[in-house]
Image (cartoon, rainbow, N blue to C red; front, side, top):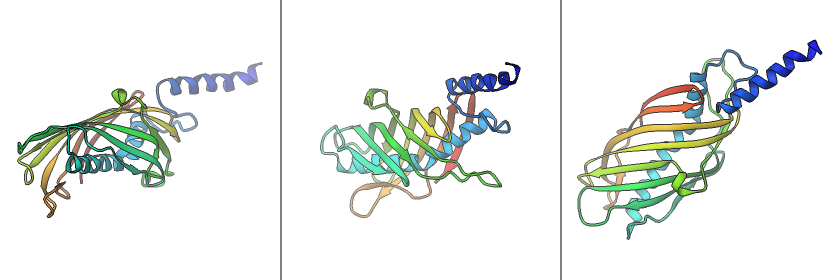
Length: 208
């Protein structure tokens, strides 16, 4: 009976980690903040993709609802952006978008150093009202600026199990793409905020 106790306690501990939204069993050197960092790194490429889809939807909109825009993960799954854009001829417009993910992965996350890469697959709620929200405000279209936020939870499977919640602020410049449509000025977009997973928090501050 005594020899089985450590295994029982390990199973209980793993269950506790899962309930908190993380899987750290088997690697005592990984902190909860590091888990949150890894959870965000797997999503980082999708932030740019979601922004691109939002701008594509903006350019294609002929009514308040943008045409649904989608793309695939580099490894698997789909990313879908839906929502509304302000109407009228104003040079300042806003968008209110929902981010849907199904079996989405951009492949191995390279952590650097001698750490093994990890693989995480993401999904969102199928209910658009519960999906992460991307809001954007465009100023002085077409050659101006934009600000926005990306907030909400994503579910994870693979090397991390549970959820990660983004609370990001977005800003950058916009420009005419040469055809009369609006695009983000390359290299001008700044993303700041936090990614929270279980007890861990990762501070995001990147420019792309």
